[in-house]
Image 1 (cartoon, protein in one colour):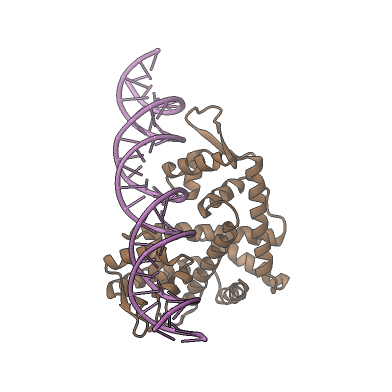
Image 2 (cartoon, rainbow over the protein chains, first blue to last red):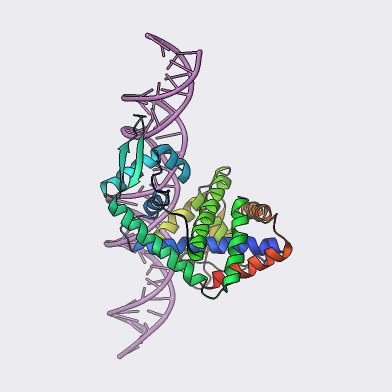
Length: 145
Length: 145
DNA sequence: ACAAATATCTTGACAATCAAACAATATCCC
DNA sequence: GGGATATTGTTTGATTGTCAAGATATTTGT
């Protein structure tokens, strides 16, 4: 492949590079736990839910971009490990609400700290203004997706 | 989870969100091809190599963060589909060099165009200066990882 | 009440992955 | 040169992630 020419090509390349680095960072971090990347990802998604939110299997599957069939076995295993639990939906007896257990919450918080530490490290050389501006632009970009 | 408070928490959250959106974008794009995400990723890594570079199985496995055992079956399947090929290393008879075929190169270029189009779309509302600044900061961040 | 829609689970098939064992080749050192 | 050691890639066996399709239970609409 030839070197990027246009600004768009440069940025596209940077996004791919960032994605790849985040990916292998996450893989490394997860390796020290007993969970697979997909399992940790599930914990992260559930953990990021606002407190008190109700997440049904279907909602979670949609958020994660997998089928409910896939999610069933994923949740089965995480439930077996005591990291999250199904509780019956109050009014819809077909549904379960998925939530972290204490143990799962602990794991989530610990993992979240890793993310914060990474973010601190990679922004260490930026000025407050530069970081704020970066964040603002990133917000716009995310809004376009 | 509560709302982000510090700038670091905000940025960490944004990075996770960006990652997730890129992830599902890639999944959607790949779905219209006959390849799995992992297979397309392999094509991308090989395709991004500088022209004339020599990639052995071991190198590629390292770049991708998988074992050579995993890569062997991955390359087997892509080779069966005529997207890339193994050619014997000139001096080391244990090794192969992995490279895209014409067909694989075509697929790579097509996929690369998708990436460029996405980048254009998400930066459409940014001024030239804002994009340049964003790119510069992103460069620093990537350099810290 | 009944038909249609919905939520979840189950099953069968295959891809992705790793660790460990293996085969072929290369390198080192005496 | 030749034997010990290291490296490269493949194979094997096990587990996980994934989907599509079908099954079951429940809810909704008429």
